[in-house]
Length: 222
Image (cartoon, rainbow, N blue to C red; front, side, top):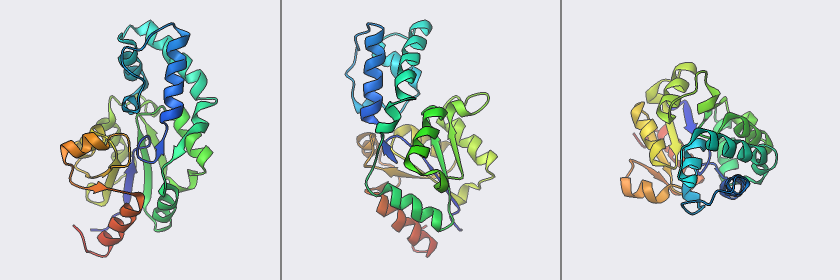
C-alpha cells in the first residue's frame, strides 16, 4: 500500500509556540486582574483557547472567558505569532516530504487565523495542501477526532494510505478514532504523556520520520 498523505498537528509537533502563547495568556489574565490558579507552563498548550483560559482562571464563566480570549487574540494575532519557533529539522523534513509528492495537511486546535499567519510567516504555504482547525469548519469541529474525520472526507483520503503525526494523547486518540496509523513526535510538548501511553510508534526527530517514510515506500516496514 502506497503512503499518500500525512496529517500534522502544529503546536508541539512542527513548532514551539510556548513563549508567545504563554506571554499572551499572561497578558490576558493581567488585563482582567485574574491570578492564575495553575502555573503558566508549556503543559497548558494544546487544548482550544477557551479551555486553557478556563483552566488558568479557575472559572468557565462565559463573559470572563470571552474577555480573556479577546485580550489574548489582540496580542497573539498581531505580534505574538511572529515569535513562533520551528523545531530543528522540521522545515527540511516538510520540504522533502512535499518534494516526494506526499500530500501534507495541518490539523490543529489552534484558531485558523493565527495558524495561517504562522504558516505564511514561516514560508511553509507551498508544503501544505490545506490547513484545518477546529474553528475553520462551519460549524466548528467539536474536537480533533471530529476534525480529522472531516479532513479525511473533504480531501478524499483513504485511511490505509494516510498517517498522522502529533505530540499529544489527544492527537493519538484522534488518529485511533479514525483508524489512522499514528506517529508520536516525542520532541514536542506531550512527550512524557505519550511515553506513558506507549503509542505504536515514536519519532525521536524529524529526520526519523523521513527514514520511516523511505522504509515504508521500499517495503521495509508495515
